[in-house]
Image 1 (cartoon, rainbow, N blue to C red):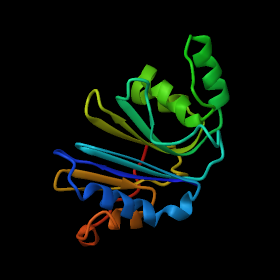
Image 2: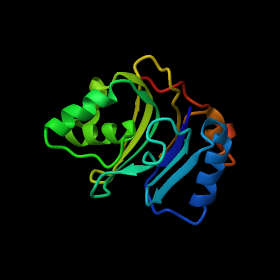
Image 3: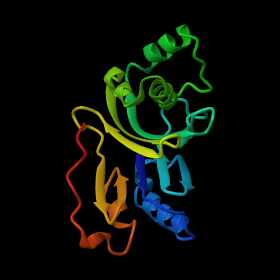
Length: 183
């Protein structure tokens, strides 16, 4: 199943960021008990609870581009990832894992957010593009994989489940959680 969480906001990461991200991941541990991955930096936090299915040993997330500027957390399955991988290899690309997550990452590097047009599957994706200081939230066309978000006071918080957003801050329960993010 897996689950993703995180936030983007202007400013420096503070000492509470790790505790906050842990609290969010703890609420979705049932979605992915096999692995937890986290990334925190100024302006961004990404978390992932993973149920290892594809590339059990090589699919740790957040996964980053070779230069470390692009990070991705992903919940779902890309049914055509083998064909997409093969096409990228034929174009001269290389891969470090067998993970469908890495396929999405490579496609994002080549096509930007238009990469979703190539994906056949069910997915919720968060991509942090450090080159442009931009967070992209992408979801499958039918919304099979949930992705909820809240925007308040200049901060965007997202998660696979609403309870993770509620765990993100003491006052989160005072705000209305918006509808599921549509593709």
